[in-house]
Image 1 (cartoon, rainbow, N blue to C red):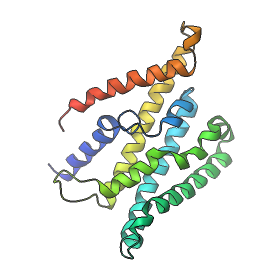
Image 2: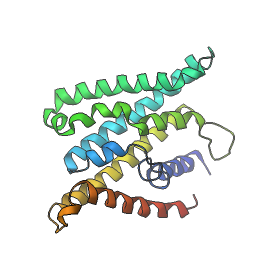
Image 3: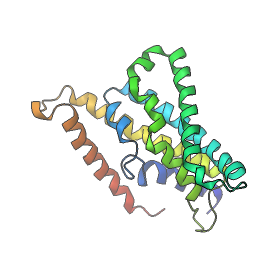
Length: 202
């Protein structure tokens, strides 16, 4: 299998087979909180893709050229969190300046990307993930692509959830099930559906 084949496998794995939300159960807070409207879900998804991709690139460089050479590997988690926080602040300022309506609709969930465990999870997994040969760890390009595809996977399930929840607004849902109860049941059903991808051998 050539390198393009490995990239395809990485994409399918990150988006469907080991989706951060429905397989690893990371990033559930924005998944449930911002999935009420398609517009806000799309905006959040784009922000997460941007932050995950850049965080994967920067954290790889920090670990390889700063932490490991100077024996500071024990500072990995805190340095990754600080990097992600800085990126989220940048994204927040850009969205606030260019799209005030989207900034308002995202509300508190935009700064919460800083504490979104999916973003930190992809950065940490990039440092410990093995490629198909079972020996070589992810290189810089692999890390960036894995971060991008993981963000795409997050956006796919966020958009799917938002689309279904918008339809549910016009459905005859029992009063006791409206809001978060039906969202949790829906999230469980989606997780079961994505669990079916586990059977694929790539």
